[in-house]
Length: 295
Image (cartoon, rainbow, N blue to C red):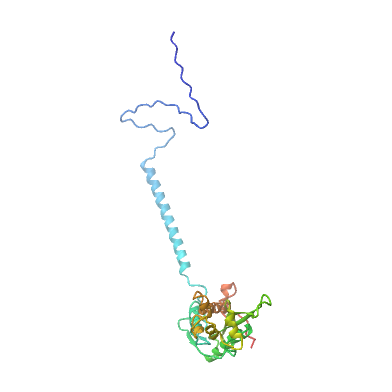
């Protein structure tokens, strides 16, 4: 008795796919066209031509938009800054011939077209400050800067078209932490006063601590100025250090110089002379400070 052989069952696990049913292939007849799917459209040459024209038009439109955007950005980049107003001052005068002070002013005013213009005259003149050679105390330092500015303005002929810079550095006392310290702590600071004949603006630099050995020679019976005390205390051999890198240059090994913090004080003094429009106020005049009433 013959029996029909049974097919072996295929086992499936959750991670093994079921085998696909094999559909017998119909052999192709040479030269016969491939059958198309039901409902499919056959795209002729005309459809491809119309699609190409539409893509070309879209590309041209995108190119025009991108070009317009580039022109707008270029206009913003090349537009003159809002602060490029006509320079107010014909003369800028510095109340000192110290090369550090003169160099600092020259470097800063070039960034302020509302202050200086190509034809503006820069001058430096030696004028009295009315304070000791080594000012001590913030009030004394500020007074020296103001008097330098007033005297320089007068020496340059005065007038509202002359801007004078008075620059004074000095020591200020910082309270001691406790009574254990015999000497108070003194810091050096630079004050800049700007005067145009009617308005005075001030700016201060950062301050740094004076080494006790130097402070003792300034505040003691020797009453040295800072440059003399710096040499006497062994921090420098250059007696003209005040006209170069300054004590701060010696302490920081040139990382910070006297010119650096003088520039900082100048920029702070110029803050109140920025155009009003840059601060959201009506652009009326660069003179937006209160009239000077102090002596």
